[in-house]
Image (cartoon, rainbow, N blue to C red; front, side, top):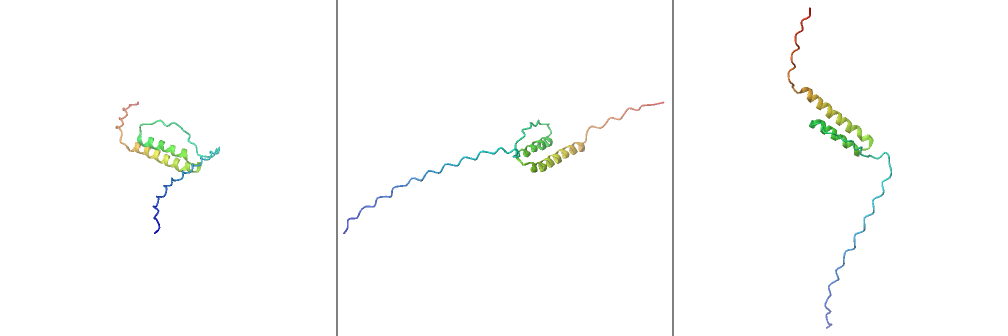
Length: 102
């Protein structure tokens, strides 16, 4: 009988280190690339108007051909806000005083 050689446990292998991520390529100086305008928008106090004006910021991250959709949406929102102001009943208009002319 051969002497049994006790099995030695396999050495636990350490996982290989993850490869380092490649650095992001330097952005090219593309004057046509979208760039935020960072135009300050002052709140008006009217929630509908403020929401429409905030929507203008969405155009900052779009190419020029995407601006039309944003501008049309903002225009529609502002027009709806103005229409809503016209539809609200306001205080009655006082009658004009009668002027007698001879």
